[in-house]
Length: 459
Image (tube, rainbow, N blue to C red; front, side, top):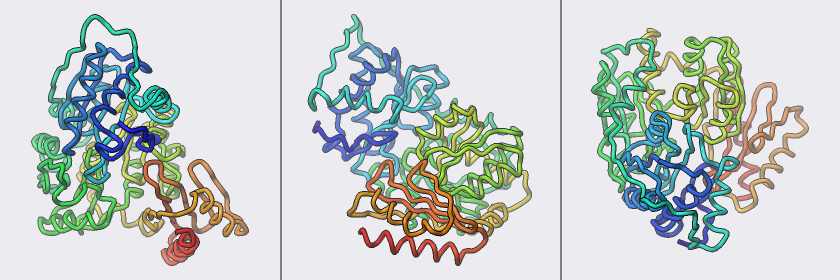
């Protein structure tokens, strides 16, 4: 294990296997987590990466040596670790995953009791300090108990699917047809379990977990990773397509024409649906794209609340405001009834419920919002300068145009007819840009292109 702290992100750990993250790292992580949180039991799961089972085993043995009992979930999704931690009242949970990163990466997402996130401000700094302050091979020496913890393996797919389907209030129509692309990540086995519990038709592609990712890294945010889902939707005549990332805590949607639907518009659909079930609820959203969400929430009697981007921050806001639902344009969706955590499968179920009751096609449900608030899609830039310098240059350019400024997460500037968000990524060395406008795609594109010109001076 090297003294490389770059694997520690704002709300998870991600690094290259054998270079930044390895079995020793996980063993020491178990020591640090135990010292800080003092758990008596932990839930541990892992994704389909070739290194994940090895890392999960090292983590489990690290906890057991300190007398901590381990509930081994095996291959699963991050949301299943959240579920097990909350449902079975575990003292904490850790998912071995690098989410949508390339196959050579791995890491983990951590929660404490009640599935509360472990990130910056909620334990991540303390764990990093315990692991590294006294050298890269620090051996923390808590008082050792007289016994070793036991390990219990459990398959929770049935309980997990049963719980999520119990949250629906309407029957899903049996004539609906869905294409699900698991991307050879961890989702396939759970989707198979889900398909056996729904009346509609589910056709899977790339369902077999394979950490070599023979059909590309399961990251549907990349445009080049969407074609197979689009093709399958058109070929089968499906009513919608759904594509999951590697640890399936995010679900990305395609309409019946195979068109990829930006996560921003899904937030609006789900917010409206939740408010019909829970009138007057608070809805959390991130600051990158906001107008459509705010308008829908207010029009349906809800209360919109903005939060800093990132799952640890959204979850903290969810708990602070006791919100029913929170959504990010990056396809993380959080629910009060799911321990305020994010899940990729519940949004899929809710969209199926909506299609079953609305009498509209998926494209009809989103077309109005897309026309009303056209967006750029999130654009990522590698830069040679510090992000704050680039962000300041963009701010200075637009400072004389009477816009309002928000610095909750990077820079957001809002004008009468358009707005943008520019921020440094919490997980990757990138600058991220989002632009939206009011019913004027040409205006959005011109402002987008001008900001890109400024950013390119620093590349």
